[in-house]
Length: 413
Ligand SMILES: Cc1ncc(COP(=O)(O)O)c(C=O)c1O
Image (cartoon, rainbow, N blue to C red; front, side):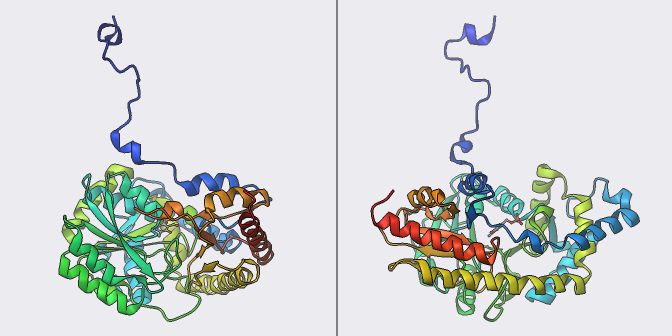
């Protein structure tokens, strides 16, 4: 006789989910991407780099070279920490472009920054622990930390990034010491905002005073189109109590799934390594070598970045100009100095989730802002991606978007 038949309280469901799964929803962005992938939709929704700018031919050559010169090792299992020459390259690259001083053995190669968010969550967060985040915040981070049942304390942002007075207020008022301060200081996703130098210094000082580690997520730092480069939090803090993360997703291609964590604190590094080992043993031996073969040719890599920047800068400018031209009164938006997104605010009475339904009828898409806001309901914002649309599509798409906002305001839903 089965257990189910003998015990009336027996849960007949065979797959019984962990409680934590209750908080995990498929990312709103991924769901939207499915819809906006249709060929006739002008999509400002994804966070996709421009595929026509991927260095396909040179990368093909790098892959061939790897297989020709190091084939068996490239196809073999490897160590969790990462391919040694790539770790060395990362430490030299960060010194060159970010003034970050780190040794190769402080670099952990990971399978995309998204894995880093998961690993740091896994290593540091118990259920109910507090993470301080910007508001609005990167959805992928919320999703990763949600899996570890984190709670969030949010800090207000303005044109200079997070408001450090608000950060101080939050720290004074929060009863339990937060485990982490997670920030995207350059061209933040979703807002496009950059944390100013003055604020970075304040953030580092405040974090040190309150004993909170800084987790600096910097996927967009190399994509600067205007303004001066600002030192990273890691550089300002001279690596103390910081974790830094970046990726090749926006400089080479996201399909590589190669990124890195810099963890100067040995004890922390040694805890994150087994967390990664449990997740995937190691990042692909082959792609690590291919990325190394491609990126370690500084001339080729820097030339590629230098070719990308003016294209993205033009698309940003065109999107800003088109918004000025086509959006009705009462709308505003950021003009980011880099990255892939700008953030727009429409009149209070517009709910951008309902607006998306209206806009998609005219075949234009964006990401409604509501899911990026934590502990707050804000319905009249949206994220617009400018990197993955041609000049013509940007102008036409923003025109359609402006018409959709006007139609919404005129009562159409
Ligand atoms: C702030 C931020 N962190 C992390 C990621 C994930 O990047 P990766 O492709 O390296 O996983 C993204 C991707 O858009 C991002 O915007």
